Length: 289
Image 1 (cartoon, rainbow, N blue to C red):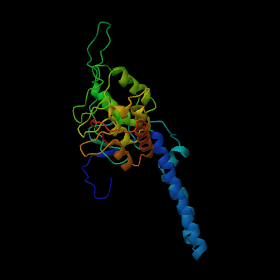
Image 2: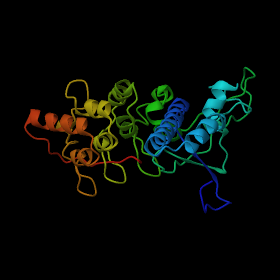
Image 3: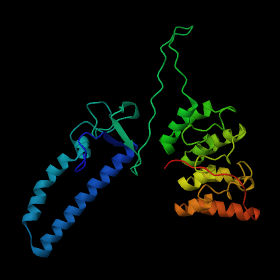
Image 4: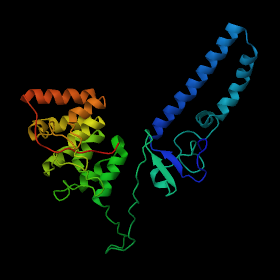
């Protein structure tokens, strides 16, 4: 709870990896401990203050005992055991969240969740319960929600000529846009399949962003490289992706510069320079931050 927070407000969770949270907690604890030691020792030598040094020495064990991470390491429970009685941060996995829980990313932006698709419970010929097939849009948005940690195998299996250029109902996002932006390890593999199936990187979302706008804004060098590559990729300069402007009149290069994505700025400038131009007349698109 934050000061003056509405007591009836939903409990808010930040979506992050467990390992990343452990690292942040460890650094925070070590930082505060080191700062306390330096300040107390400094005051002792500067002003001869003994009381503060004595108090800090006595309180150190208590502070360690109150730290959740230290308590898990030294007093049982261990790390990585996410059973209900062993969670050290009151963490929840995605499947444990309830409608009363709000989720935000590490920048504080609210993450919109969709209800999970449940099995129908009907029996097939073999006597096994049939699972309702997850809608393609849900697979696509789940991939986006998980970002660089996404397992794209389900999206790869679901992609087809019929849906490769489909757009989400709410914001008109395509598979190519999302894969160009999230920066997963197998970006090339998925984008290659999207290209083979006839995916259109010049398609635009409701903001007028094309797939290169997405890669440039969200800082995905792997996505930008595939979109600009004239041999194995989409040859984005020839398609007009680099010169396309969105509804605000901005090109992918404008967004890359504004977001400080210098590697993508270099990629776009080099790709444009290599063909002596780069204008084009493609639309643009955008992904949520």
